[in-house]
Figure 1 (tube, rainbow, N blue to C red):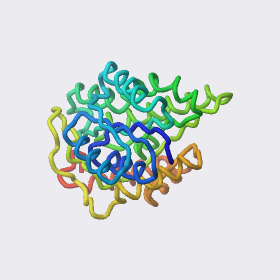
Figure 2: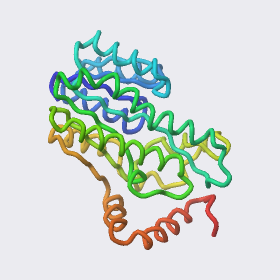
Figure 3: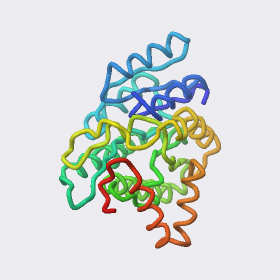
Length: 269
């Protein structure tokens, strides 16, 4: 990653923050982006005090113009782009029958359209550098999770987009990596949207038993270096994907019963 120019969206917390720190430590020239400018500025300043090279740029990836400005800022600052990491994401928890449809729109705008916008404007520069497009998807992009209709739909859509982008660029040197973490300790569940669009506030899961964001970030950097196509993380996540290929109906029941055990689960007992 030495002297590679890396853009990371959603860099204010969780996997995005861990990626920014790991990229900087590896010698990358790193652009941190998020809606929370105070948070990314603090992270960037902390890293720069250690003689790393990072900059912060405020952007809401659900707004196309913000994404274009992010790419323009990166080019003006560093002159190129080597890695575009589409990490920004939000989640939700509610059964579809009770869900305000604006919740799905908001989730799709960030998780899917945010990646579309950033990749679209970064692509000409990535083709020049033979760089990497990285999409942080989820196991929920391989197996639909109950009470996460909007989230699962956004991740399925993201993976479909990235697969096509890879195929369209078989004759170029573009690298496309789809990352599917399992449950990871981060604040994504705390900021998840409930059925009316308000924030959930507290995680319904035991965060202490999950893979850390720092471990996920290190695995992602390794996968970028090796130019992998797909990165599946956590034993549980790999088990779900494998079992779903051969026993989808059984996995429906296993997933349902597992998610039913969450505190205040909206699923029918």
